[in-house]
Length: 259
Image (cartoon, rainbow, N blue to C red; front, top):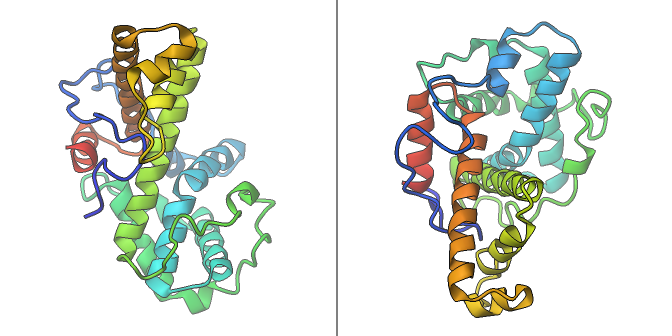
C-alpha cells in the first residue's frame, strides 16, 4: 500500500471529510459525468477526442510508471508502450466494457493495462514515439519522467501506478483550488498556504514568517490556512469524483487515500 497522504507536500490535514456535501459538489447524489462514462457512450467525433485527451493527461504518468516498473523498460521504451496503450484504448471498445458494479475505473484500467502488456510484442511496433501526436497531443507529457519512478522495479507496478496517480490527483486538486482562490480574490490566502503547507521538507516556516510580508499576525494566518486547506480538500475531492462512477466508489477511494 502506498502512503495515504504522507509523501506529497500538500498532505496537510486533508482527511476527515464528513458527510455527503462539499463546498464545490453540493449533494453528491447528482453525480457528474466522468471521463470514462462519457467515453463509453459517445460516438467517434470531436467531443470524444476531447474527452479522451482528458483521460490521457490524467493517466499518462500512472500508466508510464506501471510500464517501467512491470517491465523494467527504459524511459524511451516505456513512453512508446504508454503511447501505444492509449492508441489501443482509443481504437478498441475496451472502455465501453467497463462495469461500474465490478470495480473502480482505476482498478479496471490497471487490469486492462496488464493484459495489454502481456501482448506487448504485438503492440510495440504499432506506434512509434511521436507518431500518434496527431491523435494524442501528449508532447508536453513526454518530457523526462525520471522523477516519477527514479528506480524502476523498486516498487510493484500497482504501487508505482497508484503513487503517480495520487500525485496527479493532488496536483490537479491544488491547482483547481488555486484558480478558485484567485477568482474569489483570495490570492494572499493561497500564497500563505503555498508558503506554509507546500514548503520544502526541512524548511517549515512559522506562522509569523509567512504572514509578515502581508502584515498578518499568527491568528490571521491560522484562519487563512484553515480556510485554504478546506478549499484544497474540496477541490481534490471534486477531482476524485471525476474518476469514479458512484458515491460508494468515491468514499472508498477517498478513504483509501486519506482515511
